[in-house]
Amino acid sequence: MPSNTATAALENNQSRLSFTQRVYRRWEFWSVAAVVFVVMAASSAPSALYGLYQQQWQIGTAASTLIYSCYAAGAILTLLLAGSLAEHIGSKRTIVLALSVIGTSFVVFMVASGPWSLGAARLIQGIGVGLLTSSAGTALANLHRSRSRKAAAAVNSAATSMGIAVGAVSSGLLVEHAPAPLLVPFIILAVLSMGGLLAVSAIPAWDKGAARPARLWRPRLLRLQAGSGRVLLRVAPIVTAGWAVVGLYLALGVEMTSTLLHTQDRALSALVILVVQGFGGIAPMLFQRLSDRASSVTGCALLIAGLALSVWGFSNTLAGVFFAGAAITGAGFGMSFMGSMSTVTTAGRAGGDAALLPGFFALAYLAVSLPVVALGVASSWLGAQQAFLYFGLFVGVLALLAGIVALLPVRTYRSAKTEEGLRCQLSAAGR
Image (cartoon, rainbow, N blue to C red; front, side, top):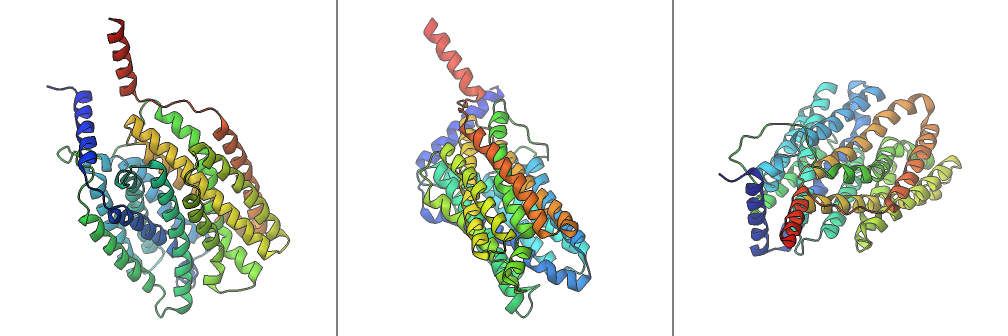
């Protein structure tokens, strides 16, 4: 009977053989990218609706923050407990399952009758997003015509940023102009998600060799292989700084824009999110040829400069300076996200560690959710300006440390299998 290592190696070789024989089509890659865009738009769409929910059910800021934390908890726990699902059933089936779960959350949103049902909708949505993010990252890397992990990371970063931006602003427009603003956004998202589900279902399976559906799957905590922990530890400051900035603008951006522009228009107030995430999507596409280290260092530098400019502009009531800083900050997020994700994708492919990418996204969602929850509470007694100032300073210092870490020499990552193969070669040469 073959050993587990031999079986895994055989499956790996079969998977690689299927890649070389497979015909790649552009629509397959871009269909998965479009799914990421739609799901990220759905994740930010409820943000513009919280004001209506507060009016309808008389819920306060603390309750709204708790509802958001349901979404974050669903995504993080799913990544930690079900991050290996794609390795078991294949990333295509995992994406289809994720879209089905997210579609269910839209139904719960539409029939929600109070804070508890709204929290349940966000929890279900978080579970679906957790299932999608790591499997979609792997899928994009595998479906790219040249299997370029840098190009896949750039597109993933752009789709994530642009999705968050378009979801927030479109939802704000629908709140102002749609006849049923608590229904129409989720009807549109449900139709788009169904289209994405059908498109992904039509793609010929790209990871048959990696799927093991015959074995009973059960939720269990992610376990990183030896060496993967160092990779995740290296990118942790960069991921935390970049995604904390997203959390900062999601938590306070609308309120600060309303103050600066003296408006109650929800779509106009969400303009800062469009600027941050829009530039976060554009920058990776323009600079995807940069190395992982250059992308990460550049991203950290832009985060520091953008945050400093935004804080100064808001403190002096200079809307133009504030938005210019937001644009630079967004570009910094996009660059740091692309560089860190490309690093993790490369290490995961080299070491065959399927737990590395889910661990990366779990860290990202933790970094984006904690600021939203903390600032939602802090701004109620500190005020938006002071909360933005103190947290902006904290993230700026973190980005500086992340940039220093990114400049340190990179230790070449090699899996246990690679090390074993090298030892065998050396032993054979010695004979």
